[in-house]
Length: 307
Ligand code: PSU
Ligand code: MN
Image (cartoon, rainbow, N blue to C red; front, side):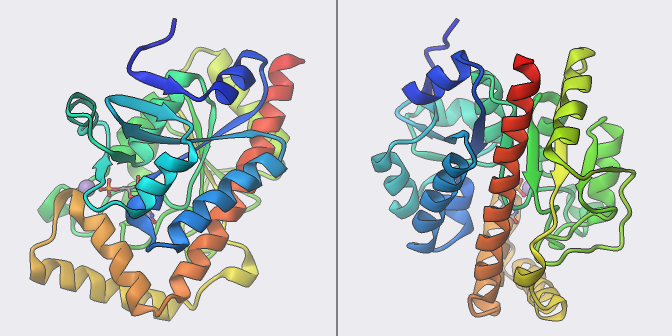
């Protein structure tokens, strides 16, 4: 039942066929989330961490008219270095495929690739959500709608406070996406472990998460999970430094008239520069932590499905 528009790497195909754990990774983080060469090093480290955790990595991207579930070294290098790599969310996917564009998938685009392939776990840094000032802009990331329909658990460090975190949680509740605090009772705020926003659900082990995934999908409920894993204590950034950078970034975006799909990459770049790379170090460490947790969850879920 393979779809000609979805190219799944052979080792991913065989892992899925054998019920072995696979972890999807996004490529927007490579093309638009970090500068070169940190982005390429990070992508390679993440794939290695998935392997060390006993799972098969599958970085999702778009190239030559297909969604690639699993990127080879050449494609990864192109994503990390080429100018004009498309940022591909659900909206952009048809045009990117039709035009044979080189595209980096956001959380929403990656969820589509993961679901097409049958991958149940996806690890990333931070998801998109409801932007601050939504009353004026109506800017709500397609990531939230996709989380409501793709049956995949996304491990992230919560979301950056470039977003309105409280409203982001409200939308997730409305659309029935469980947000699971991983070893925490609070929604983490990306660079920092706490946001002050309590979460109703908490799991302390990969097994508990796997059990919850199993319960949702065995019941036949469609849609995903957000597993919120706080940044490791030692990596967490100075909250004031970050908050100042974010506020300045939002102001600068307004002044320059940056909006729509350009806004998030603009803010990510702005914050990296304003914190003189401090945020980039924290960013890399938190993604690594999420990927390791993602591999553990994928292993636990695969074991549950076999047993
Ligand atoms: N937030 C981050 N890092 C990221 C992104 C968001 O802290 O790299 C990326 C992800 O790919 C996410 C996308 O899916 O930005 C959301 O973009 P938008 O806000 O345009 O939906
Ligand atoms: Mn948006």
